[in-house]
Amino acid sequence: MSNKGVWGSIATINKVIDKSNFCLNNLFQLKVGRGTRIRFWLDPWCGTDNLANRFPRLAAIDTNIGCSLADRTEWTTNGFVFRGCWRREIREGRETSEILMVNTLCNNVERWHWRLNESGIFSVASLRAAIDSLTLRSAGPVTVWNKFILTKVRIRNWQARIDRLPTKQNLMERGVVLDNDLCILCNEERETGDHILIRCRRAIEVRQAVNLWWNLLPSQPTSVQSFFEEIRGERRRGWCKIKEVAGQAYIWAVWNGRNGAIFNNKAFGPIRTANDVQSQVFFWCKSRDKRFRSLNWNTWCCNPSSYLSLYSG
Ligand SMILES: [Zn+2]
Image 1 (cartoon, rainbow, N blue to C red):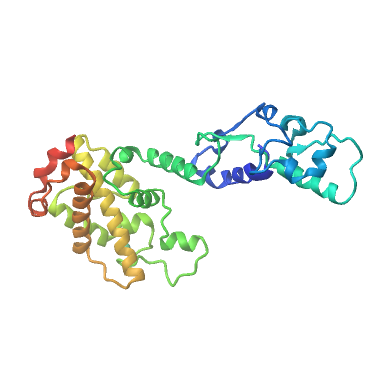
Image 2: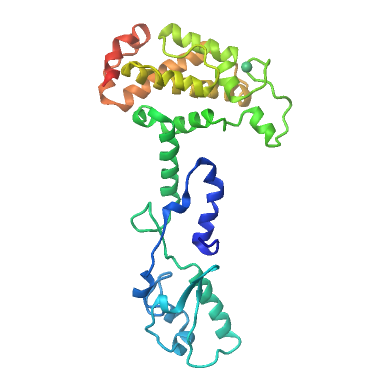
């Protein structure tokens, strides 16, 4: 694919998303022969007006005003270029500059078809949705239960699993100058994603508090990745489902607690954070699936396993 023109510019983002094994080139399709049915001067194939109206001088001296797009453009290693066919010599000045303008339009000719939209027109939204579906699919069962978990939570937690959160370590590696690299929660160890979310003693206290209420979270994982692997290794389907929701709520709550401590000077409280997990799971389930509308807060707090059968569906 040429790097010239609009489609070429879109293709350059491939370098950015390449790291996620997302092959952008496969989403483009060259529409060979499409240009033979489009009249170069008379059809509005670029913009809302045709070229005969935009460049009447040039149209008037073409040997065939009814020629096709394919007749007047040629694919080269630099993309599509304009190939004029004139009744007479081109004059310097306006005609020459107009030919350059027409050539630019040809260079951007949309013979690339974007597979993700029926119209064939590229859109950022369709690309974003495709990347999301790919990345979330790679996260395993999360997509199955996504109705329980808000998109922003899934994206945040996915970033945590691949170590893309703006932790102190990640920021310093990117050249951001900070006072220190210590974990804001314990002030003892370097702040990495796996430390602050999993190995930090304050995070462990959160898990212990959650598990006192309902034994849902792995107690001794070493990383965010192994945390979710352990949850997904659960054989009982209902348990696995509720544990996944709780695991997502836990990562979300600890990271928010960490941010509150850094940006709002709020003390990090393991009990309060565990309560956040408890209420998040309650509200996510209750609001996002009609089977859970009967959830009662008091029962949820005192005897949550009484609802376990609801999760087996
Ligand atoms: Zn820590």
